[in-house]
Image (cartoon, rainbow, N blue to C red; front, side):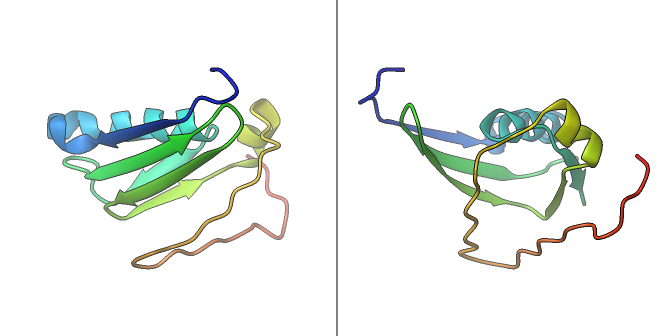
Length: 106
């Protein structure tokens, strides 16, 4: 992408059949960020959408979805390191961020 290119991309799971939505969401979020584990409360019929604004160097993503847990394991960090920064701002609902304080074998 050229240095001055600015793009806006809208994505939603509502256009997919319910059985495909969780897999689609997992691939979409991994593509925006890095490898994660996804823990859906209700994978069948999961609803989510994004508005992604990006340039060659930066992106801002607005996520809205049904309840979900995103987990990044130590093994994923080793296999798919990610040196980028994240700035998370919940605009609705609740967001909980946890960090494991003791090492565990994975």
